[in-house]
Length: 168
Image (cartoon, rainbow, N blue to C red; front, top):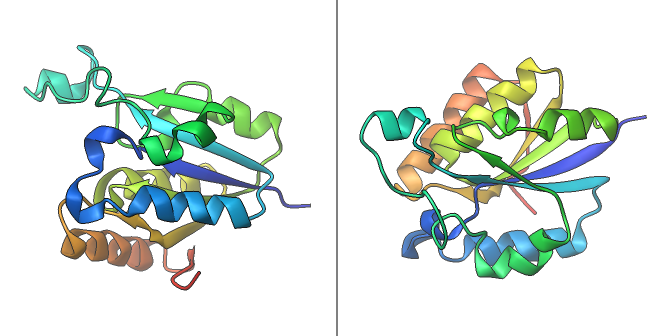
């Protein structure tokens, strides 16, 4: 029997810019009506040991930048939150062990940025053997809709059989 987890990728204060300000509320509404076996959150924390920092990017290192967006803070407080210092959710310490322990076979992805962290997470989830579904309307890129669409197109091309959900 398949079990599904929703993985909410990096919906934190730093990444929610005015152009995508409605994303956290959309995810919150979705979570209220959707049925998942598990819901987990990831948050990106740039550490002095990360490649981002090594290449001169010193943002998103601590609160408030790393805090889950206020629209989702209460919800995330009730669910596991996994910290990562790279693109993919599946490189967050403890996430894979958690999903294995819960016998998760399918993952639904949403969050920021479609062209970066969601994309990397989709690839890793596929390579780790999960059935992957990207909730397109619950993803966004702070670089704009063109980057969001490019990320989706790359996933469609390379994971062409990947199930996406455009209409919710």
